[in-house]
Length: 356
Image (cartoon, rainbow, N blue to C red):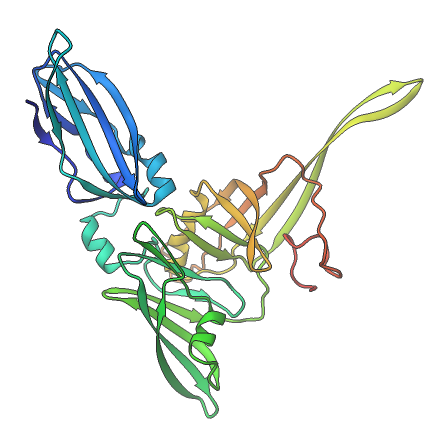
């Protein structure tokens, strides 16, 4: 019977999974990685393996597990080894202790359970600046309710504080999403008199502070991206935004006349985040490493885009005010994008929200 030399702990992050090691002297073994999420069980790996020096090792577990973990966010995983003798008869079956694996492409630098108990599912580690009309969401593992405390500046420069509980807007495999945009918080508090100047969200030891910084800038663009934990976050850019269309043309003469028989457009956009505080500057890198990025247009997910270039530089100078520039283009082949229902808006609604 196989012996378990190394196996995952009870709670793991997909990027931090260690090799699974069995001790076995059987002729050969069938090794399976079995994952369960939302009641569905799926075998994501199954191979016949032979021991080397009495050891069977599953290496590079993150590469094996992450494609499935990305889809479900959180799952139960076991590794099963069925041993066979030279005659092909099964002699024993050994299974690792079940482990909960959360999707994550980040090195936490510490225990997973401590992080999940003290942090929301984001690499943001500090205050986030936002403004009315902007979408904001936070995510937590094994928490379906948070406490929101909001500060309002009333007449006479008096700050009034209000507190309410907010239930999760959606939960998938114990990962809950909370819709915490300034507009939603204002509704949650009953739209009290005064101006919302900031609010905090708390679930146990998890804490996230939002600061209202409204200089009248209209975001262009607003992007929704999948962060390092598989959750959708939002970045609202208020710096310079450029559009540049290039065309590839192929021509030939038909009946003695020169014609363009193929014209292909590639529309590129260059955006600048605008000034970011230090925590947000660190967090913005999650946009640049994201594999899924979408335009956030008129309160809904829009077309998928692909980032082709980015400049992410931070210094420790006292007067450093980081802002990042990046280039993106439509993921789809057709770049002749027609926008309807936005009369008066220049270019299109992926480019400019100044005229509504």
